[in-house]
Length: 234
Image (tube, rainbow, N blue to C red):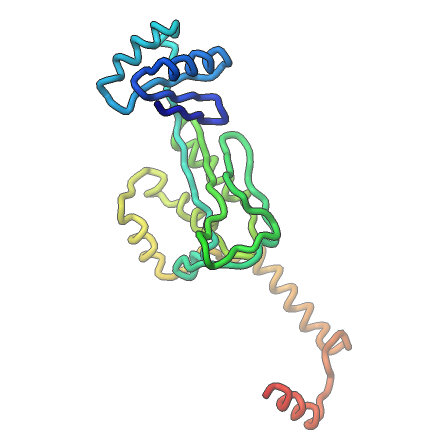
């Protein structure tokens, strides 16, 4: 017999050919308000499961099987701009997404050191919805909310992937990623936005304007000081 619960206990799946214990658990979970799905690892036992449901006092027509669509993105401490090589280090900040249909299975937190000796997975980010388009939309929002600093992760890669027309339409295959990654020709997944470029330009202008006003910059230098610095670098 195999029993599992999904969606935080709202759906109970009982398989195993309709054993007495499984049906008793299914009946009790139904009384507690859970949706029940009963099946078997052997297809020939499915009809027996329906008869067992009636015998247990459960209406087979009222049994609800799992429905909807789910997408999982595994967030790794890897650098997608460097051939997905590991990116060990300390997580400085971490803000996990939340909201309807979103689940983030993770044990990571700010201050955690990601080593190079073990699996660099940070979390399993899951989005569920009634259909695939809505699940994709929820996952996009969750990825946009995901904030991890201090290390590089696969979050930017997933943000890009979920915007590809072929992914949206479901027209992908086992070698799909090889083709789309080759087509990028090394273009980085993390690209500065116009807003960030404007801030960088303003910062550079401020540094240039204050370079000679005594704020940490030297206005002159002697040959002796220059030679001492060269010697200090040896």
